[in-house]
Image (cartoon, rainbow, N blue to C red; front, side):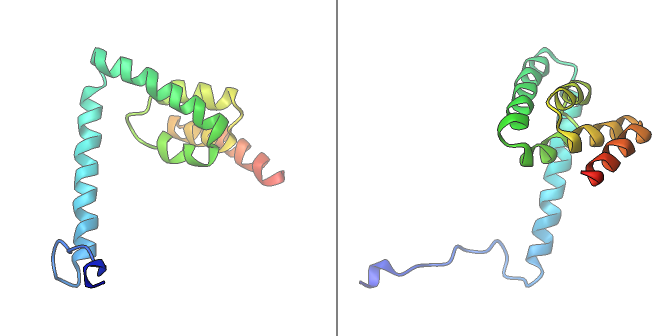
Length: 118
């Protein structure tokens, strides 16, 4: 059964520090992606896309609340509408994070304290 031999996938570089350089490449791609979406925000297409984002936030609040935070931290997510959804769905961590993002640290602190008291 010599043809069933398992091969390792090829590495992009054979340098020991290639893992670190791959992280930097991903960060650059992420930065370009963020900049693109921030400039894209004023278009009609983004407005349609934001409806899908808000629907996904609602669904995550209901069915995958543990995944919500990684998404609402993205700068192109419409923070005000996400905040309304998270507050209505009683997702405390996300609501507190969005209060922080708006600069309302006192409201965020009240939520965090309440979470610790539970």
